Image (tube, rainbow, N blue to C red; front, side):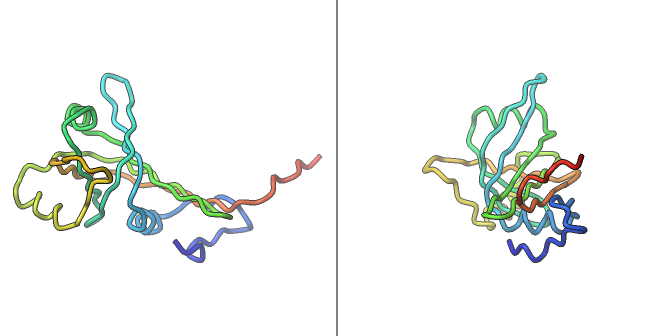
Length: 147
């Protein structure tokens, strides 16, 4: 991601990103963390993903992730990047659903999303966002406290 798209006002090292900036970062990255909560217990999973129409798509196999997002469809997703002199983080809140219609599955398959590890991941999950927030950080020296 080109740092030129991030204009920090008044040398402020933290910039709150707008929706378009957040989506450019989400679209330019292919990995993140999915947070699900069941019975008040959060769980987090590293995932790779694809984006289409401002929705996220991921593949999964039967197991905790699939079971938990089926029980509670409200999820968090976070992706970030750290470079030599800058970093950013985007958090998406949304609703997950397992795709079960053949047309939806075919559209998700067309995104070319491949599992990281050689395991069967036959289920596609779509995450429709309810909100997206992000911040961009410029690194620098810790400021001296004024007396």
